[in-house]
Length: 296
Image: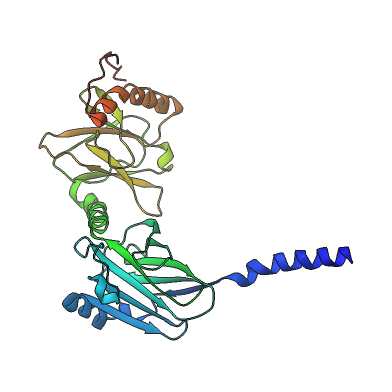
């Protein structure tokens, strides 16, 4: 009897995860992709569509009240909204695509709702033609997620820079184990560097007042340039300037760097830590050394 009870317990535990949740991929198969819905959003700030299988209504709105929700603490100025009304008792993970005519896609692993208690994730898909919105629901509910206008704007700026950068400044040489140099001028200009051996084989540096230092992989306050990878590709990067002055910015790179190159770059990076702390904290740290780095 004890063995039978134990067996039944094991079977019940194994069976629960299999029945708990169903992935439902609506993707672009809904009315928000139609020209009429996009025109409605452009003219009235709201577009909505309903499906019967699954039983959901999806709305994109410029004002929270257009989702049927009132909350004076939520800003309509800084946010648009995506609303989901779910009417079933079935546990599901829903995924639907929202065209970029409503907002430019950006990445968020966790989007907290302004109404309801279900989080979502946002992810650009199909070359940023859509935002994939994914959420797990387990009962009838109405949930509203904010779409941050600033995040969308920055994502659009970054994507447009990447898509146009090769036309603006050319493409780096295909492969080299010697330093190659380029000069960038102006804010938000860039340079595309091919990486035939993958981005891990790249060494990217810019010429600062204290010598050559590593280009960061995301926008930083201390650096006038950063490296942006192409989505889904590891054979090139784009160097994007954030330099607001008209002073030309010199960069250099090796597409086939050795371990010695990477160690030397790391040492030069370490030598810049004091300057970065002073800039970020806006204080003078006199006990840091001031030795000049070897420009090798």
